[in-house]
Length: 222
Image 1 (tube, rainbow, N blue to C red):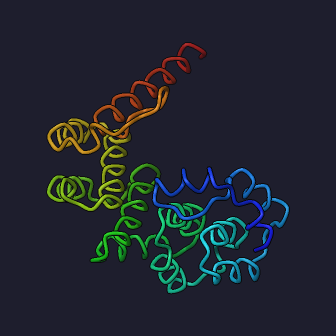
Image 2: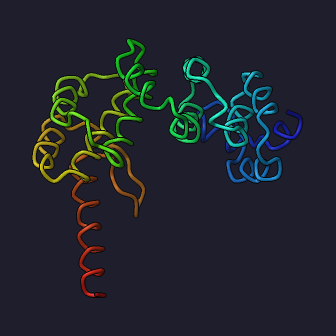
């Protein structure tokens, strides 16, 4: 904890706070610390228990994902109230456990929009990597009906899922583009130069263009 405190940078803290996070540790330095510590499940549990966001991020980097039980992960998500801690918990830990699908279903239906956003994040992952068994039409129905008025973090996760459906599944692409165009969610989101807008129609179109370009290069190479 003393080492983490020494890494706290007021400029990094100010930047993080604008995105809803409450720590000031540079993430490159945090990853370097995790690399030095390597996997230590007991230490990870102690760090998580402090409640400090930087300590929890470090915990997620050095923990052993498959060591967690389903209920432990559910409790951790409900404790992880800042966006980056939640994001790392879902992406670095939950996705690597055998409980991911059960939690995806439970969280997606949770009345807490922050918990539900984690379920939608896991759904977006399944859409992209293992869509067999998913009702993509049903997902688009829910997105169309609920995304426009959803709280920010839930809206972001649903928009991510919408984009993934449009990018990965050509048969649903036209509807995904239509939903994005009509709802206009994140249409005016400030996007840095050389980055792709999170506005679904732009995101889908750009990623499909890149996929087509890669496919064309592969065909020429053959």
